[in-house]
Image 1 (spheres, rainbow, N blue to C red):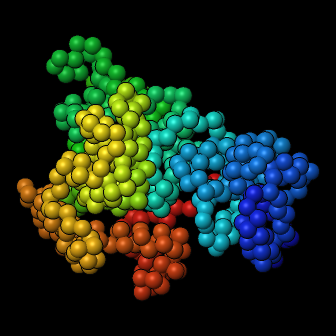
Image 2: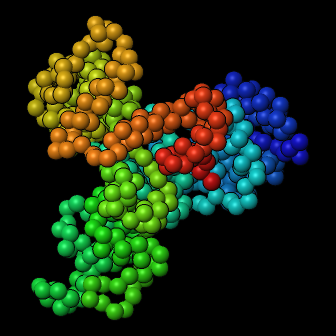
Image 3: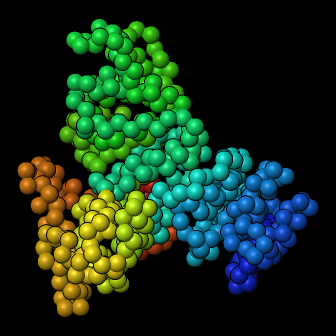
Length: 477
């Protein structure tokens, strides 16, 4: 059935070892299980096993530290890492040290078996990378953030073009920097350009450089951002604000791998990884004729959608503590939040997302006189568009009420004029996207289960995922 292939399992939790041994055994695999890294290492050295599944924290050695040693003696032996430490750094270190996949605990056994099958079927060994710097660029343990960690970890071993979408303040540049700082090009420069901050008539010169005399005022040759970022990463923020002429030139760079300066004649090889970001709906911009469809598909090779803070309220305690710690590291007084203050933070709508929360924590760290910040202090600082009513008094919010509340915020944010022509379709699509994402998260990407839960035909679900550009990302290797 599985050619009697042997899987080596290392976990200091007896229950985990038992469950994995039974599940893998029922699937036709031979299993050897241990609670120690030293025993696992001895098995590997002796040439045993076709796959390793290991925990991170074990009594005698960290499972992540074992991976490079395994790769040195048996480079084709794949390693799956599982851990209850569901952080970005855990996923990243697993990928950088050569793990095929990282699974946060608790995990679904069907997902684990699917990972095992992929790992044993894979032909190319995962590429090793250097040690990660000990810092935490991304914070959160919500399912949405776990998926982002795994995606970013995968991408650090490639040079694929990435499109990051998300509302203002969700951390798009943080993700771009993580892709650079932990990727192949970390030894090169990280150059960020905000398209919305550059006058339209100067964008081409800013990006590609210019020759002396190319235009009025060009007294010397100007080096563009593509040359500045050579060997590294070019982060094109707010790509939706790029004018049509610059879009055409950028498309040519992506197609041909070279560019010319403004006024120049000789092509220059583009040696950069491009990461783009936007808060705009680029598909809507394509329909309106303000963004090139062919450029969109060149940039949208790997899409990463960052959820707004209101979609991951469970991350607020971690984020608030992280921002208070950063404020203390910057010389501000140490502060802590009462449980009631944390609950009050969770009831805010956060239109400014994580950036708004960070600013609030810094402000309170600097100005609040007490060491412990209570709910009253939070309430005094926040300015909700509508009064917050205790959920115990108002009763549970219905789905209709929740949709109406968010539509009010949407309308309020477009006081200068609502999108014309397709408002109905746009609102339905915006409701459909999070629904499909949540159902896929609940079923761990199992489209058969998701289709059954939604009451849809599986082919219909696949078409919707394709039309709405919702990827189901699996695996690190």
